[in-house]
Length: 172
Length: 239
Image (tube, rainbow over all chains, first blue to last red):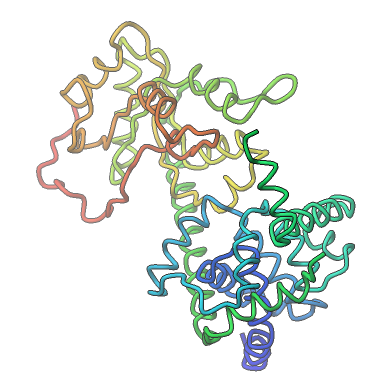
């Protein structure tokens, strides 16, 4: 890798890291794991940077790889343990506002696919068609996952419907 | 309805902002390590191909391999496909020592073929094991994607016949009726009872919908340094 490409890569890295870390955190729910899959994805990008730099959005490539790594749950459990050992920090969250805590607790209840779609659409700000292209899914599937995910989150986050839920669950 | 855009942004900002952005140098280092590993993997594959070629030389091995895995009709679930093939074809696996040369292996092959309890024996190279694994899990790419060919050991696969065949085979080869902690013999690392392994896996807790196929495919075989060959001084001439 020549020095110009190296400089470009470091700029790309510093420019995109914070954004992607947020997105991966929202999908995985664990900061150590998000950072680890992201580091791996960037490492792979660094190996083929001379090709990737010509892409419209190398960031999307890194995100796709990181999401795929995060999706391999069996492997990611191992990776989480390794990441914890290496980073030497328990994955504790910093102080969050009550709203943020609620959302943080609600997210893991969604299936991985729904979380992925919600994050790409609502946090990364991609339109449905681009989410579909990025994940290799039909647009209809993306829409369905979006609406199911939103409904599930609303149920968990909105206290009144929460109450309804609990009442429904009570024994008669 | 909740404002999901804003709340996701708030949550992730609050959760990630306190951690600094790691230096890019770490990522670059990790990339270089990855490249080195890939190169090493390719080298191992090359060695395996050369070794398999040596084994196929004249006077080499003539075992009859079982029918290849060709499912008729709709492919069964990967698990069934795997178990069915396994049960039909393999009773025991003999893992030669890594430092056993082509001559040792040929001697071992002849010896195995001559044993009365051995119905059929063939040699499976690393690539063949990898091919089989890939065929079995063609629809489970996550199980084959990052598979390291070096992780699959080469082995003599054996179909046995007769009662207590495995115990007798093991006694012939290693002197004891069942696998012991230490290495089996000068040329054999391990003789593994595949039926027992299969049964263990089937009844064990690892069998929860998801198969960890590596358990079935390769018995734990720690990588050993191939040089210097331990016990090289005390090695007896074969036969």
